[in-house]
Amino acid sequence: MIGQVVLSVPLTAVLLYGWLQSKRSWVGIAIAVVTLGTLYFVWVPDEAAVTAETLQLGTRYDLLAYLFVGLLLLVQLSVHLKDRQQQQVVTKLIRVIAINGRQVMSRRSGGDEVPVVDGELQSPDLDGSVWDPRRLVTQGAGRNEAE
Image: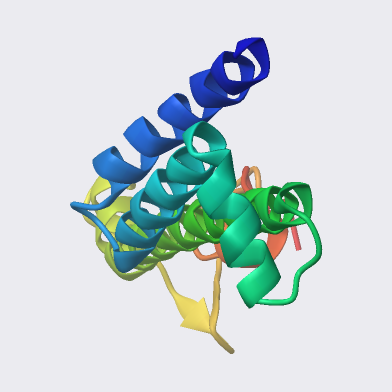
């Protein structure tokens, strides 16, 4: 009984995570379904033994271990998909900054056009530095050094 409660607490948290993610992606639904199956097998060990024997997985503990590994992989996939979505948002933002950067820089310099030679912005200032938002993509972030 204590072991069932110890296993049920993190599984309940994973079930909640899957339920919250189910509105965004199919992975959340898969997490919730696998978690419900795992919770069922934790609380009904006789069914877990029969299912493990039917699937030729060994004991019920092997079945639970495979289900936990499957849950870990699904959660990792969910995190990967969220990370990829965030990277796409940042890429779109950088593109907008790069496209609109020339217009912003021409307003900063008092309405003068900023000359572009070979795809690089040339500095209209005497100190030789101008902020080029396109450098965010290639160098990370910051101000351009004098070329």
